[in-house]
Length: 220
Ligand SMILES: [Ca+2]
Image (cartoon, rainbow, N blue to C red):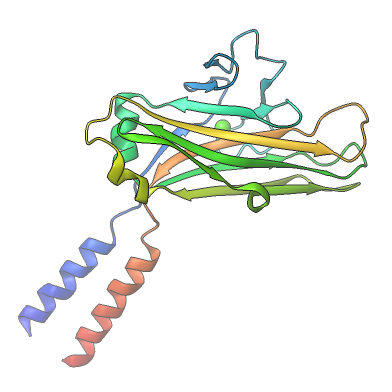
C-alpha cells in the first residue's frame, strides 16, 4: 500500500508542473528584436518601416496595452525574428510557437481577407522550412465585421531533430497576406501580440495523472 501511495504522489508532482512559456514578442512600444525579412532584415521600428509598414497599436493587445500593427496591404509582408542565444535555448526547450493576431472592426464596408499566409523556420542544421497556412489562419471581412482575435499555435517539435544541438541561428518568419474586394481608402491591417515559445499545456497530462491516481486508489 505504501508503494502505491509513493507512485501516486510522484504522478502528482510530475503532472502539476506549470507550462513553460517565454514571451518573445510583446511590442509595448518596443520592437523586441523583430525585423522585416523582405525589407533588408531591418528592425520594424526603423524609420523606413515605421510608421509606413509597421506601427504600435492598441487593437488586439492581448499582453499589456500595445500590439504591433502591420499596415502593408497584399502579399508578402514578412515579420520575422532572429532568436538570441537565450531564446534559441528556450526554442529547443519548447515545442510550440504561439502568436495572437487580430483585425480591427470594419470601417470600409467591403469584403476581403487578411491572414497569416505561412510560417517559415530557418535554423542551423535545418534547411529553410516553410509551411503554407493559407485560409486556416484567415480573417474574412464584411460590412460591419467586428474586431476579432485568433491565436496561431504551431507545433515545431518535428523540426527540432534536424537542428544542431547548439545552433548558431534560429529564425522564425511570418508571411502575411490580405486583399480587399474593392479599393476604398485604407488597408486591412493585422495586429500581433504575445508571441511565445511554450510547451503543451499540462491539462491533458494532468488528467492522465489524475486517472492513474484514481486507478491506484481504486485498487486499494
Ligand atoms: Ca503587448
